[in-house]
Length: 181
Length: 181
DNA sequence: GTCTAACCATACGGCAGCGTATGGAAGGGT
DNA sequence: ACCCTTCCATACGCTGCCGTATGGTTAGAC
Image 1 (cartoon, rainbow over the protein chains, first blue to last red):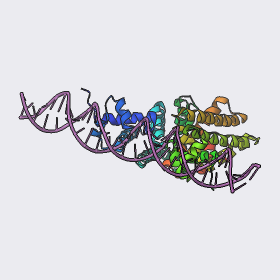
Image 2: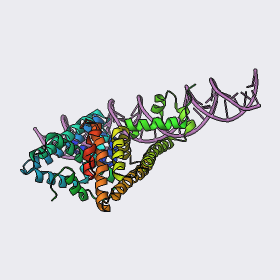
Image 3: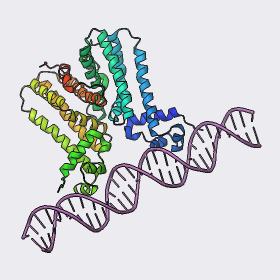
Image 4: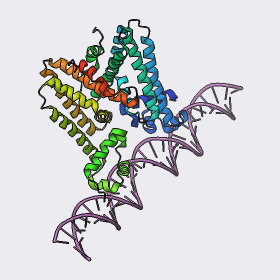
């Protein structure tokens, strides 16, 4: 047999979201993708909304894992650089982040993406403050820096910039006033 | 009476796009918004696609107007600062840009938004080069800088940053290595 | 005042996706 | 061997939007 779990559906939903945006998180198309039918879906989930929420939870956990892994790095500058390198090397998260933000008309999505974004911003701001940067300055640098992460993903998406994100690590590091490698 | 023109529809479509995203560019809802019915719409336009294209053209013209206005400014540093101030003061364009990029699954939208984005990037890169910045450095700074413009709009949208964009002008100026005001 | 072109309202058919109902298959416990 | 739980397929009705057809209304030319 080829039976599915709720997790399989959630994973597929997150992939569909990253590729096709919120409109692509549709039950029947994903069922086709999984080689099954709606019958399976409505066994595992109450409705479409529940599927979206499950996908969001998957995504939120990724952020928590990343932060947990980096929390052990004592040197804040190294912590930031590692974070940037990981983030820039993986084009999937920025794509999903972008998609989710544009899907923020849905209050459920908005709430999660806001929570995750704030978490990320605070994590980075803390690193800068540990390096002696005043709070308000750190805040501005991080907002602009994280903004450029999101925005560059957007530019790559439409083909306005075809350079790999990794080309910009030093530039972003400089922007938030960290020493280049 | 209260008769409408094709331009009224295009304007309303662009507003709907900025507020509700691509899915909101729907004939019947916009008709309600305009206090009319589909009958009006299909008199002025062949189909929904034509409406989207008209809205895109409106938006593209805004960019051309802005560039034309700034082309007269001889000093490239002042030109950039004026551009940033104008851009940051108007939250609508960044919202639309963001929406359009996330709607780039539609090839028609993708093409326009890519063309406009490239135009903007080139315009800014030229300013930096006029100030003596090497081409490749200018390119990186502009991509990151314009990226942060888009990304910060995203962050404001979800409420992860509630500061007005104007608070970040100096930070962005510094990021692309321009003298602060 | 009449005529005509421009403009709009309404009714209809079609499609895609949501959610429900219901029956069936597969496999482990006993 | 039987049953019961788990899981899935199919059929159906509903809604929202697209696009068409068709008839009505208004403004101005004359």
